[in-house]
Each structure stands twice: as structure tokens, then as C-alpha cells.
Amino acid sequence: MDKQPTLSDLHDARRRIQAWIHQTPVLKSRVMDELHGCQLYFKCENLQRTGAFKFRGASNAVLSLDDSQARAGVATHSSGNHGAALARAAGLRGIPCHVVVPDGAVQSKVEAIARYGGHITRCAPTQEAREQTLGQVLQQTGAEAVPPYNDFRVICGQGTAALELLEQVERLDLLMAPLGGGGLLSGCAIAGQGQVDVLGAEPAGADEGARSLAAGRILAEGFTPDTLCDGLRATIGPLTFAIISEQVRQVLTVSDEKVVASMQQLWRIMKIVVEPSAAIVLAAVSVNPDIFTGKRVGLILSGGNVDLDRLPWVEQPSA
Amino acid sequence: MDKQPTLSDLHDARRRIQAWIHQTPVLKSRVMDELHGCQLYFKCENLQRTGAFKFRGASNAVLSLDDSQARAGVATHSSGNHGAALARAAGLRGIPCHVVVPDGAVQSKVEAIARYGGHITRCAPTQEAREQTLGQVLQQTGAEAVPPYNDFRVICGQGTAALELLEQVERLDLLMAPLGGGGLLSGCAIAGQGQVDVLGAEPAGADEGARSLAAGRILAEGFTPDTLCDGLRATIGPLTFAIISEQVRQVLTVSDEKVVASMQQLWRIMKIVVEPSAAIVLAAVSVNPDIFTGKRVGLILSGGNVDLDRLPWVEQPSA
Image 1 (cartoon, helix red, strand yellow):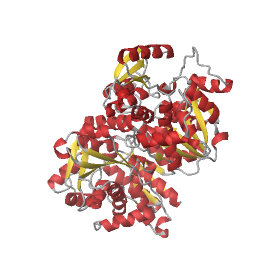
Image 2: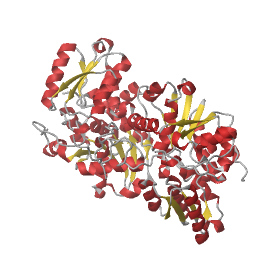
Image 3: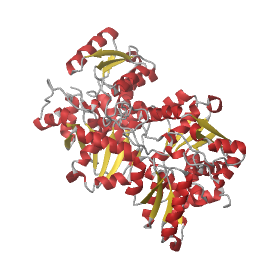
Image 4: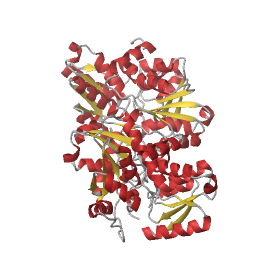
């Protein structure tokens, strides 16, 4: 297993990707604060390039390659945001990018991968099929694998979102990020060391992360996630598990119903487009007043890539 | 007629309302710039308090009243954003607010007026009915009328959005704002004096502003606007007409179809919620490459108050 990244590795990553990424704004709303009984600071990674924090990790991975490694390009499996981010970062460096996409991925995300020049291979929507298909692509192309989260370079890149937030807002009590595969959450945990308590939020229908942390070992085998949060269906990896189990205070699980309500609230009150996987952090606040009331809370809104004609609160015309 | 506001009046307004308003962010997107062939700077008044620039003018009007004037409160007619903004500003000062709302107003906007404590009176959706009903309310309450746009204090407040934008972004070639009643556009024109060419954007189905400017006199009598841009259905007033005809270079008219396409583009690419009346400035860019190509363009995104379950690109279940 890789060694664990440190705060100093995150600062290196930040310097490396600085020119490529947006320093995203932190938004506040008095109405939101009143509704939730705490001070909420929204770090808007939905406004990041490619519409998600994933561009940070992908950029750090692509910029970490030496020229000979880079030549054959990069490859990954992704249900969307990581694939689009990697394709964009590879395009900026002028190298090829191959993305294995499971069936059922959100259409707008698949289109984004193609728009940024990624070469797409489809596969069945299981962890096994993703990894097997990626193996084939790597063999055929000689590309460097850039896993979506269980990767030192990716974790360091994602953690820069929290580094920025901790500079933009003073004296946070708590910082929360979504938990899917754990790249963002583990990066945020490293960024927060000694400064702020870091929490995770995970869909109840994809709670293998919370259960694994409770059991002290990864319980992902054969697990089939069932959640609207399409960005959080991946299962926690060995590297992210190790960091999160040491450094994250708690992972809160939330129903999809609460996620949709929070997503609507963010659109309606904050006037920003966030995807379900991003809204989950607000949903976790809304159902845990015992943890959050009166606190200064930083929330990482992870992304904003949604199909605008398939919104979860709008009745779909029957097929 | 009132005398015309000057740049110095705008600076006074800015100092007056500074503590109440958000200095809204200016967003940029490389993808947007590539799509439109120019540098676009989006001034996000959809992120303003109450979800629209209207809070600026309303705050300036409410804060301009002396204590004896203020006691009986304020009153206006509004299809939504101005009413909500005035109710909020009045609430902050602790005085009553009465709002005459025409039938057909967007539901979420009417709810916002009520949520901020405004007292609502409904009327028919015509300019005559609005003014007549407001007259009755003023008589009954003794409140101070704060018109939605044809008002010195309101124009000065709205213009502070452009004052900020011109500080936030250097060397703009063009600045564009939507034209409804003309409060925002006339305020922006005063702010831009000698620094930047100011343009307006108006719905083709509510183009009495552009036609009035071409004719040199207001052609609003009996006019019934027909546009999706619910915030731009008001007709230009004598004070705003005078300022706009002297200081605005051109008013561009745009079809609702183009507005909806631009609204979707803003949601999808910029990840922000804007209403049709805000998206019209981008639509005007998209259909006028001769004017905008290669230019540095500041666009005022006026507001973000929409009914999320009645989006213009989503098929409505039949009633």
C-alpha cells in the first residue's frame, strides 16, 4: 500500500495545480443559517472547472507525471466527474485520456467526458466490470492509470479544496465532505489536521463506508449501492479507508429523500446548481441538529453536474 | 419630473446600503468564453439577498426615509422581486411594507414577499390595475410609495451593481443589463459614464422600451407584454426613459426561445440558477456576434427566482 499523504504533500499539490484550477468562492446565506441554526460556509466546487472538485485530483495526477510516463496518456474508470476532469486535465497537457464508463451513468457527465476529448469504453455498472475493463484498456494503450480516489496524487489534489476553505473562513468548528470512494474526504481530513473536526456524509443506500469504518475493515465485497447520489456509488478503497478511519471524526448517513430536499433548498435559496452527491452534506446538517446547532460549519459542495431535464423533484413523462 | 441622478448620487447610495447588501461575486468560465467568442464577466445578482438586484434599490429607498416618513411604512406594486426586496428591507428597518401583486406572478416570488413579512393585495395584471390598487393602499395606510423603477432612490441603488462590477473587473468594453421598467439599466448607465459602453437587452415580446427609444417618446399605452421573462413585463417610465435615451448606446431585443437556451446554458455550464429575465443578457450576446466578438463584456445577471418545478424546458404534466 502507498504511504499516507501529509499536509506538506497537499501544499505541494496546491502549488502544482494552482494555475489550472479556480479558487472557488465560499458562499453564505442568512436565510440558510436561520433555517439550520448554525453558520454554514459553502465551498462551491460545483463552480470548479469541469463542474466538480475532481478536477483538482486529476490535475495533480496529470501534472505529477514525468514526460516519458505522460506520453502514452492516462486512463481511469468513472461514472462521470472524475472521467471528465481527467479528460480535461489530459487535454490541457496534450496527452490522451481513456475512460471506462459504467452503464447508468448520468448522460450529461458522459457527454462532458467526450466533449473534453476523452476516449470512452462502456462496461456493466459493477466494481468488478469497471476494474476488469480498465485492465484491458491499460494493456492496450500503455496509459498510466489514474484511479478515481484510491491514489496518493488524487487524494492530495482533492484535499486542496479544504486547504482553500480553511484560509477563506476563520475558526471553523466542523468541516464536512461527501463520502463515496473517499478521495475528497481523506484529502479534507489531512487538510484539517489539528485545525477542525472533519465529518463525512454518505447515502444510506451506499453506506458501506460507514459500516466499514464501524467494523474496522472494508465491507464492500458484492455490495450494490442504491442511491440517487450517482457520484457516491463507488466503494471506499484501502488507502482512503486507512486515512478516514484514523482522521475523520464520524460519517453520517442520510436518506435520498433528505438529499433531494436539501438539493432543492440549495437551488432555491442559494441560487446554485448542485448535484445530489453535493447536497448530501447539507442534508446531513438538516437531520443532525445535535451535532451542528450553533457551530461554524464548512461544507464542501462537491459538484454541479446534473441532467437539467431529469431533475429528481420533477415528475418524468412516462416512457 | 425628478432631476436625474449623478455618479456621485450612486456613490452616496452605495455607502448607505453597504452594510445591508452582498458584494456579489463576478464569475467567469473558459467554456462560455469559447462558446461566445468573447470574454464574459457575469455579475451574479442572483446571489444578492432576496435573490435579485432589486434589494439594492429597495434598501436605498428604505434607508433614505427619515424616521417620521418611515413610520407608516412603504408600499409598491410588483410582480415579485421588487416586492420581496422591499418587504425584506422594510423588515430590516422594522417598518411595515404593502405590496400590490398582479395575478400571474411567479408563485415562488409571491411566497417570498409573504415570507419577508410583506402585506399582499392582489390585482389584475395590467399597469392600470397595478397603479389604481396601489393608490388605494397608499390612501388607506399612509405609507410611502417606493415605485419599482421610476424613482431616483431606486435607480441609484440598482446602479451600485455596476459600480461594483467596474471595480471588480478592469477595462470592460461593454456592460449590458436587462431592460424592463429601466431602473437597473438607467442606474448602470450612470455608473458606466465615460468608462464603458452600456447596452440593454429586452424581450421581443415586451419591446416597448426599444420602440420608445427609437421613436423618442414612450410608446407604452395599452401595451400588453407577452414574454416568459416575468421580471421584464413592466413598461419604461419617464425618468428611466430620459436617462436611458441619453446614456445607453443600444437596446437589443431577443426572442424567448433564445432566452430559454441561454438560461439552460447558464445553469448547465456556470452551475448557477438564473431566471429568464437574467439570462436575456447572455441571449443578446449569442445572437449579436457582430457586437460582442473579441470584446470584454460585463453582464448583469439580475436574479435567480424561479419556480423549480415549472422550468421552461421541462414538459409540464397536463392539468
